[in-house]
Image 1 (cartoon, rainbow, N blue to C red):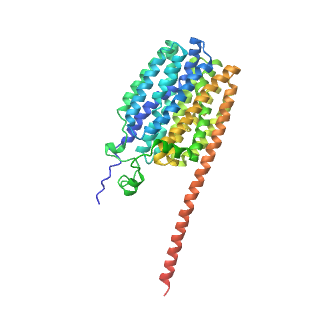
Image 2: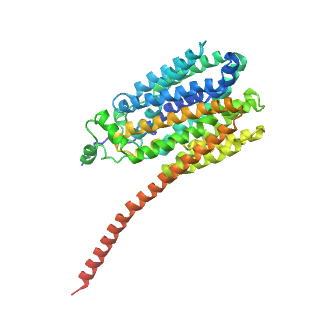
Image 3: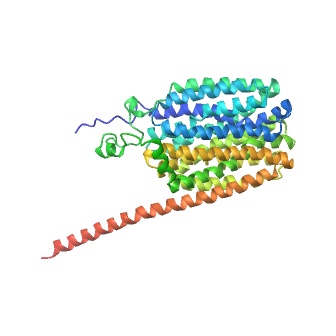
Amino acid sequence: MQDTSPPEHHGRIFYGWIMIAGLWLIVVVSAGIFVSFGVFLNPLLDAFGWTRGTVSLAYSIFMLTGGISTLAIGGIVERYSIRKLLLFGGLMHAASIMLTATTQELWQFYLFYGVLSSLGRSTFGLSYITLVNRWFQEKRGIAMGFIMSGQGMGPLLFSPLATWLIITYSWRTAFFVIGIVMAAGVLVASVFIRNRPEEMGLRPLGAAPEAADSPQAQASAPTRLPRTGKMWGQVLRTENFWLLSLTHFFCCICHAIPLVHVAAFANVSGLSALSSAWVLGAMGLMSFVGRLYWGFFADKHGSRFTLMLTTVLQAAFMLWLINAADPIVFFLFAICWGFGYAGVTMQYGMIAKDVFPLALRGPSFAGVSCAAMLGMAMGGYLGGLLYDISQTYVTAWWVSLISGIIAALLAMDMARKAELEKVAVAIPAADTMGAMSDHATDLAVQSKTP
């Protein structure tokens, strides 16, 4: 019988990898802008006389807006063109960052940076996850690791760049320039993005040739997605949804505090503005390396085990930051913590693929992402608020550490359940093999009986 299924590869390179490179470009620029918020903290304090808590609140509004809008994106990501969503969202994000350069009043900063830029950026995360799941049946961890490695490369490039622009020109120029770079990156990347491999006559990497056309596959694929209200009712009754959401929430509190405030902390501890930016850059470099490593690691050992291990590392290395003053300590922290933190965020999307059915995957991961945004918002704001109250970051680092421990304990529970699932699958398989062996033995005995 002739195989009419679409080919897996197009030419020598599977096109999915080319698309991944385009997504990586968007991640590099958007993550560079996002993490560079910390280098704008002190310049904004000097320019307007605002408090750290007041400026950090813009970051929290950014995350809260992203969390709420992500819920809406989760309901439409399977219904509309992801390429168009990314293009629209990316250009909106870029324009809002450029508008931030015109800020004269606090409410404008909250509106341009906190609300509008976040609305644009909220189209990114779920789009990456959905595209990887559509294009890759195997090597999904590697693909996701490569995309998320851009979250390390971005700070490495943009934190020093933004700081240099601030020192040489002004914080307004820095916001405007990085906004232009964001727009250019999205326009270039959109050329390479395709919604599904079938649009190019391909099948997902690793998919069986008959998978797309088999009656079983067609029967398992829903012809029409359930109504949004019904989907959310099912999601909210799922134990894995709450476990994954709480893990992501506390995990994000843990890493939001250092991501937003470590550069400002290094600066007030005696490092120059540029050296403080390079602390973020060093974190970015190790995050870039770590995301590649943890992608391979997750493919071999499983996403839930990888999440457990990296949340432990992320929490443990926060101890180094408490009472840190020596520049060497700052850079050692950046290297070690950045490597552990690198493996955390990329696991959630792959775990969602494993634990949620296809029809509920969009809203489920949107809800998990919303919990993450709430954690990021709380962590970013708490860091500034606690500094304003105590005039030190020590309490903030302890809050980060405790939140990281809670996330690690929840991740351990998920890893334990994953092992139990493996055992549950292995026992029936072993029983079946044993029964087949016994049957074969009986047949052999009967054949020898005269």
